[in-house]
Amino acid sequence: MSEFRIPSHNKRYEKKAVNKLTLMALFFVVIIFMVMHYLNDLSHDQEKGSTTSYTYLPEAGQGVVYHKPGFSLSYVEQYELPEWVSYELTVDMMNKPKYNRDQDFNPDPEIKTGSGHYRDYKGSGYRRGHLVPSGDMAWDKEAMDATFLLSNVAPMRQEFNDGIWLELENNVRDWSRKYKDINVVTGPLFNGTTTTIGDNQILVPRYFYKAVFTMQDSVPMAIAFLFDQEMQSYSALGDYVVSIDSLEKLSGIDLFEGRYGNWDEEIKLERRSDIPDREWPFNERWYAQRLEQAAKR
Image (cartoon, rainbow, N blue to C red; front, side, top):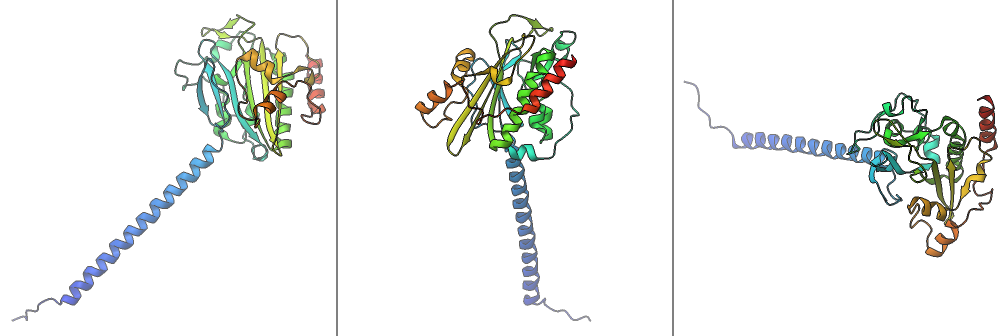
């Protein structure tokens, strides 16, 4: 007859203790994994969020504001155009490796009322002119792709788009390197024209503006430009500098509200149109390049 033995209580407790320790170890492993996953997501969100600055956006006048990777815009359905695009440009962005364009122009699926279409531009005689240049967003693939959405373009004459407009874009990138951090607001003016193109009747603006703001050693600086794209030729870039105040009156948009520190400083700077060359230096190379290209046309 086999001997019957009562199991040892100590062995039973030891087994339970081992099982408990195993479960606790698994529990801590799961907790550590979840924390690491959360921190990774948080880091990714912060990195992605850093590509878009919503801190100093103009108020939406006629439009609806949409946030894109790297920039924001206020879209006006009546004209199938943004009244402004706004973004931050820093020297760190400019120093990052650049992505090559592999994107074509496409309608913007986020525009609730529907954006313009690339077919609207075919045979119109106008280029699809960037408001946020793809070159300003080339440091981030997603941001650069967003510049090719048709919510970020407007009908521009080729001579204007490839000429003085491009020269100004190049100078803006130079200023981002010089001042380390700038804010840019760009857009069309809706007054002065009734011409439209395409089935979506996209307005062809006669005037375009660009305004740039920076803060240097707690001192605010701003400059603004206004262009008539119907002009046949253009002189030096500095001839198109206008006061921020006059541009705000024409556009109905407060471009840099709250950026100047106090009301007196805002009034003083926004009424200036005689900007010293040392504050916003123009690159002669870009000017020479524009003249050379114009001579070839």
